[in-house]
Length: 335
Length: 300
Image (tube, rainbow over all chains, first blue to last red; front, side):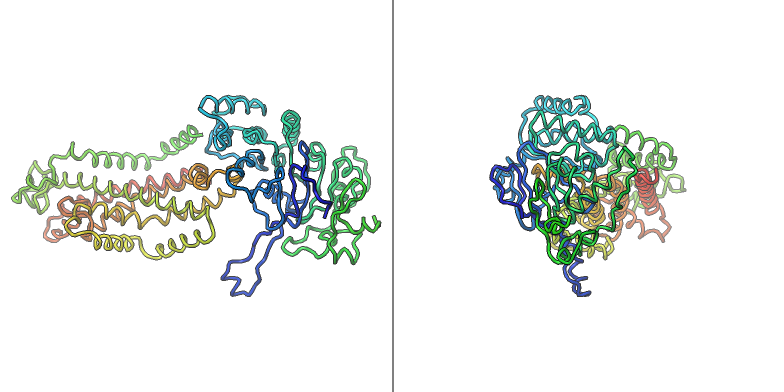
């Protein structure tokens, strides 16, 4: 485990785990004598974020990134471990204080076609947090706030009268951002906010998010599998593999000198525009079945450096130079 | 969105001649039924105006017909045309009221079942399965019998209509519940619901304001088709003699009364209410079928 966290951390996850029960129904289990089956979507993830920072979590599909996002905002309760927001554990708070903390964090979702209720007008969608937290009183003030928010994300106040289907994917994501900003949050969790968008629109949304971060001093937890987007927006990057963080470092370090073999493989898979023609190491193997992950280091079946220790013992995150890496080979100096 | 959806529906409506015809017939019948006190030549519920000497008069085009009674009279001397108008009013009223009851009950239970999941869901759905394994008419008979057993006998006639609505309403909620549960299971995992949960919106509010509007499309289709079924069920119960009292006959009661005289040659007492019922149910059913197809995106 990484070193103990100081209380000054704005958002912190401490050995957070979330296991989903994916067993068959009770009767089928009794007849077939099959055991309960748990999916360890997130298996002991720790990180800390300072105010105003952007931390990105990257990894392949199914590695638990989105589950981490939902754990952090409290949509899921952790199976073990805890999430601290400004020093407070959300799950343990009385209702009134929980509402106060909720106002300060918001989430932007992946699919702009599913994250806006198709039967609601945009103005009602954007105003929902304002109403829920009692942040605006009266029709006129509400309309004014909604108008201002829409302008802030590059839409027009008149768009509030329309329904979500009248907008493109990028515009819808702007509406999501306006909604998320409406309660004046300090912390935004962005769950693959650009992965459903065209490449040209992705850059617009990322730049909008960066501008808003500068204006409002926001803290972002940015979930993505798009390494180019991550490089563009994040201060620090955590790489996840099968429910665990295998490497976490500041963005420059991670992209220039990746230590963990998995990180190296990921970065190697990015096509480069220069068409350097250099030989690439193809990403070998498949992600193992998360219901039955390999023992020891989850990555060992695909790792060219794996030895017997890797197959038996789970590596912990340790500081090596500027990066924290969970790898026996790095520890033993084999890489 | 609403304007667009409306115009789309309207287009498909005007393109189908059968649907337009069915809608016109159903519209005229429902209108006539509810305007019965204004347009009916007699008031068949006013026992003082009945004269037993007028009983069993055949329709006006028969030999013994009278112009006072266009399609004849029944065994009480009631004008059959007026009785059908008033009777259709009761039939349609009971039908609509019991559909509304089924709808509220079924949609509510379906929403709770789908959203809460777990044991609540299992319990509600097993009850639904059990009820589904009996014919709806049997459930209606059962509820009807139990309610009549509870009620004091001197008030049974005046409460008969409410008993009828309750028994038909309870017999029909399962379809709504299953459909709404299905849509709820889909909608509750969508991100807009998570976004609402994130800011602490209450489950009741999420169900009613977020999920319900997105689950109502198929419910409207079921309600239209169910209206026809409810009218038939009411007629069946009244035919069996446990519906509305004979002093205020519905279509089903009229058919039952006429049935007694069918073999003595007085066919009109049962045929006219029967044809009215058949045409009404058929046109409402056709409307429901069209609505189902029109709202099905795969058939557009």
